Image 1 (spheres, one colour):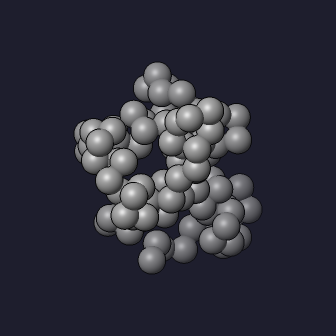
Image 2 (spheres, helix red, strand yellow; image 1 turned 90 degrees about the horizontal axis):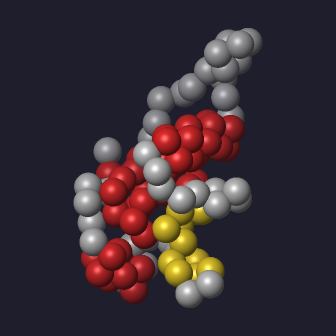
Image 3 (cartoon, helix red, strand yellow; image 1 turned 180 degrees about the vertical axis):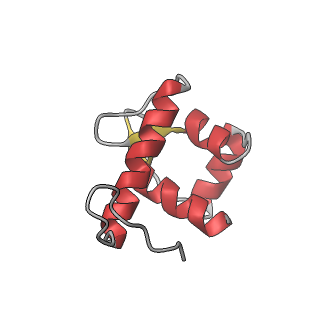
Length: 94
């Protein structure tokens, strides 16, 4: 479980959903700065997730999807991953 986060402007504790949303927004900005495609509603493709998880290949991620280790959806024939799910996945790996 992550440590309690506080609002930088007012100092009030952040709700877990706010903390998750803020971390997803920061991850979105970081991925875009690195040149990865991020949809406006916060989904990434396999290349970005593979990079975040230490260079995993598309085939490995396909195996993870099949084993339901990572939540995904299909859009236009591509596997897409919600940034909020990615943040949770990264937290579990810590």
